[in-house]
Length: 108
Image 1 (cartoon, one colour):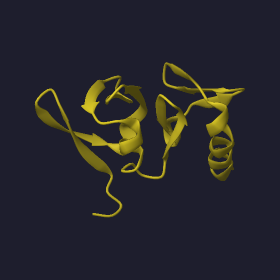
Image 2 (cartoon, helix red, strand yellow):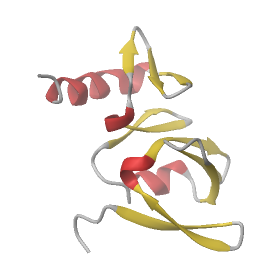
Image 3 (tube, rainbow, N blue to C red):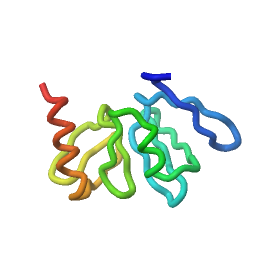
């Protein structure tokens, strides 16, 4: 199933379909992650960020030890912070160059 646009996650004893385009940020909570969507919903999912990033499409990037963002949902990036909806996320120095390179590829 190459080029799929969604995935199912198990949360609250049910399988929930999430479209990748609707995911804004993914925040680490130990061995769990909190997935935020464009409709301001949150889902708790049992998986580590490290394991999750390997199964996400290319538009997702790790920008901090505790955060993965969907590059298509970034509103702006300034100094060492980016904003996705109401979330301000500090970009770690080790991820900054990679993020800038990815964003430059998306520039007009």
